Length: 237
Ligand SMILES: [Zn+2]
Image (tube, rainbow, N blue to C red):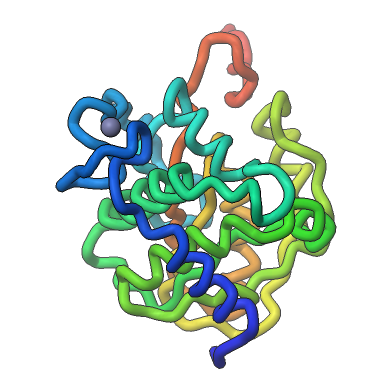
């Protein structure tokens, strides 16, 4: 993949966002993005098997409490450059790099691909945060980031509040690969719940030549008693 204007723009942006101190209090730290005092409590993701056709998936934290706030700040910094949120970017990029380090060593990536926003949403937000995530992972893995490999053809309604089955239907056929892809693809997104979006994007990648697709997310929504993520089991008998 050749250099594009977007690559140059992201590189400039990332240079501005290099973390210098604790993302929370700003004090110097030897283990960014936080100092010891500000590091949010560890919140391991729920260990569930990957949704098909993913070969594996990882997430660094549960999508709760402080992590939810950081991710929200990362995703919705407001409009315009003046409202960029370097602290949130430092935190979330550190999380996605850590999630990538959880991928089993057998899945060596050939390319890192973000789950793209629909272009209408990208216009609305100003830029695509998923591209920042993919670039951070790709740089650490020393492979290319395929920022334009996947295209979101439909601007799908938000998944919040939908059941597993509704989510699957909601994203069906939403993605298309615009070019052939190599064997092992690391697919990057911010938050996974049922994995319906990752699954659908993975399908498009497998159609385009991938043999294995690994999902890498910043966070995973933990199952809750009152959420409709999992289909209600049929009553027995
Ligand atoms: Zn601090």
